[in-house]
Amino acid sequence: MRIKSALRNRTHFAPLLLVLFLMVSAFSCQPAKTIDNDPERLVKHVILIGSDGLGAYAFEKAKVPNMNKMMQGGAYSFEARAVLPSSSAVNWASMIMGSGSELHGYTQWGSKTPELESKVVGPEGIYPTIFSLVDAQLPDEKMGAVYTWDGIGYLFEKPLMDLDHNGKDDIETVTVAMDFFNKENPAFTFIHLTQPDNVGHDIGHDTPEYYTAVEEIDRLVGVILADLEKTGKINESVIILSSDHGGVGTGHGGKSLAEVEIPWIIYGHGIPQIGGPLKSSIVTYDTGATIAHLLGLKMPQVWTGRPVMEVFENN
Image (cartoon, rainbow, N blue to C red; front, top):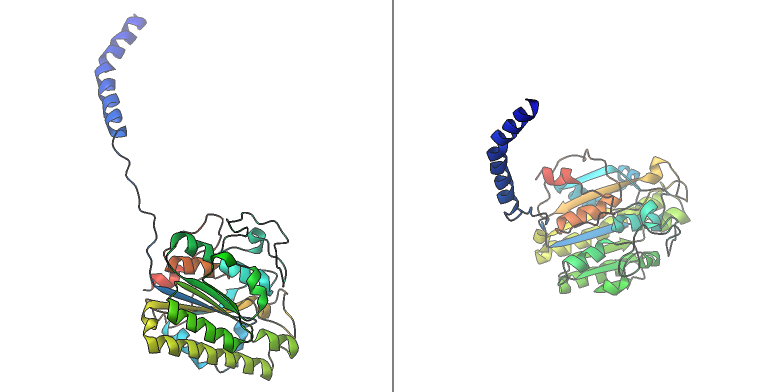
């Protein structure tokens, strides 16, 4: 009787099972819906200004009207952090590689090649930078790097560049960078300035001479802003200003906040006037991620940086 009952139940449900099978088969034959994961490009030009050795503490004493203009008209943080060790090549690499030293492998002040094997390398043989993202995803766009400290030249894919220039001083660096910007209309320009780091090493951080050097950097920032305003390109550009580290005495590389905390300022087209410091936690590798977000670039999975979305959520 149990066998007969089971057979009757199986026969009873057979039509229902057939209907379910046909429904599932029909659904599986429909073309799959795709989700558009392509990020939206928010701005035509991004300029990254890097001031070597500019500690966040410098803003308490230095007169910096042009940086203040950027902060008041955009967004900023004095609590962004360098990666450790708080020294130059490590942090400039992290900034443009969207990752910390544990992944890109540059671990020392003057690293020219990774001391730790990079987690991945791109076609040019080094860990992928923001420049490689621009080259691959915006192939018709221009990009350039102009830098006063020659150590920057080891940290990006030189064959990809439309401009690779090592300036003799910060004045030449800014002049060459803005000439390139105005002639070529690049998607991305990196301007590295060597001060106030040189004075910090020679004379000392938190000295009158150090703050004079900071004020000269501010003057050069004013030159850049004035040029953008004169040409009208400020209306299609975003400028990010940051640093690699601060310093104590005549050195850096340690774990104090004076060495690790750096300024992070963003200003320009589409950037809202937030009216106070950002609440977000920012690490220097978030700079590369934020540039990628602005230019609508997909980031490689290996990057650990995150765009500073608080800026865009307030828009």
